[in-house]
Structures are given as C-alpha cells and as structure tokens.
Image (cartoon, rainbow, N blue to C red; front, top):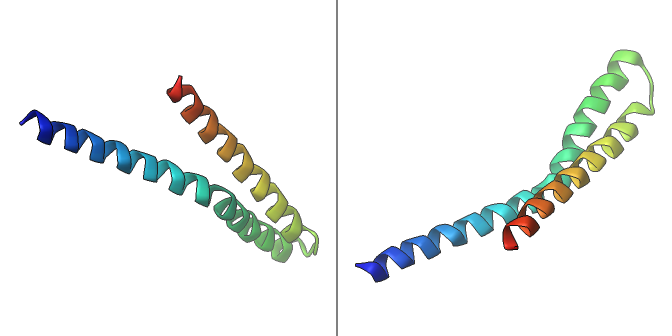
Length: 79
C-alpha cells in the first residue's frame, strides 16, 4: 500500500516537472505571437508600419520576463 502511494506521489511530481518545462518552452513564442497580434492590430488601426515589429519585441521581452519568473520560482523550490 505504501509503495503504491509513493508511485502516485512520484508520478504527480513528474507531471509537475513536465508542466514547468512546457511553461518554459512556450513563454517566449506565445509572448511573440500575442505581441505580433496586438502590433498588427495597432498597425491597421493607426496606419503605422513599425508597430508590428515593436509588438513582437515587446512580446518577446514579456516572454523572457515570464521565463525568469518561472526559473526563480523553481530555483527557490530546490533550496
């Protein structure tokens, strides 16, 4: 019975690690995508050609900030 409980606990920890890796893998691309969408909308709305590129850069910066926040949270958990 205790062995089965340990396996379930180990399995849950494995899923948590996988979830963290997925967050890390998707933070920058999703930030760029959202920035691109917002920038493209602003381009069409204000007729300025530079907003799409700026949106991508701002989205990438947001993704990097999210990546750093995730890394800090998991580095803190290891101690």
